[in-house]
Image (tube, rainbow, N blue to C red; front, side, top):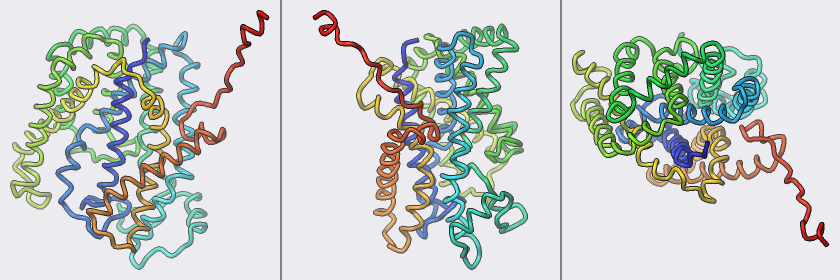
Length: 399
């Protein structure tokens, strides 16, 4: 049950990538809440560097963390599920009604033809009533309440509850599944089997189900994220699996880069686009390349990080609890800063790095406040503050 500091480092870096990715969403041509006047395709190949694997990595990390949390309870029952539900659902609800609304407000300001002219108080009165705010088209509505980037918390809670039920209803099946995976996912199997699953899921489901992040009718995402969460849980203590990832880390990195090169080579340098799609056979090959990139990038990250599994530090001790509050705050901070910086008309090459730096600065300033205010801690996923226990001075007792 020794703490895996490599998993902590991977988690910190993965959430840090979220800040970079969501800042990038402001500057690319893909739809997002607010858009830069400089938005275009220039950054999109770089965005695809993490798109296939970033969230899957977080679900593997969450599965490992869940295994350690369950290992601390006597029976894996209510002493685990209830505190875990509080750690996930309170931030989700608070986020939906307090943190996320500014994203919706500025989205309306930018997207409603002619502008959205209601003040924030009037906006919140409508937001709290729920339902569709404004529809640009029959299937393009801004609705409320919404969880936007906090969908991860809803999915993680659902997967945690499903795991708890499986452990209660079929503990021997879960034990057998863990033993089977431990045998299969060793050596090169640690790369091949997950790639096969993720490629198959993309081949079968990606064309049928859009990524909605609404928990229902999101079957492609469930087909990739739930298995990743269960894999992390079932193999958290499998030495053979983690050592296999370490041994094959360079091969995994090369395969991930080859998959990435295939994706951007077709979509950005071959003339194909949404208007001029590639032939079906090539499209299927690209879905396999996506699966290769998706798992091999994750495997490489874990493989290179594994050597730091015992590397604790003061920096790690500070950043580990900061991750959750920074994650909850970051997208709202980006949206608010980006929209209000438009009148400055800064060049994109200056504005983008400044936006990243200011987002981190504001989020960590928020964390410093949150961790000091007892009522805010559970609303941002932090454990309740504990008072240091008084230990009598032995010298005074003796003298």
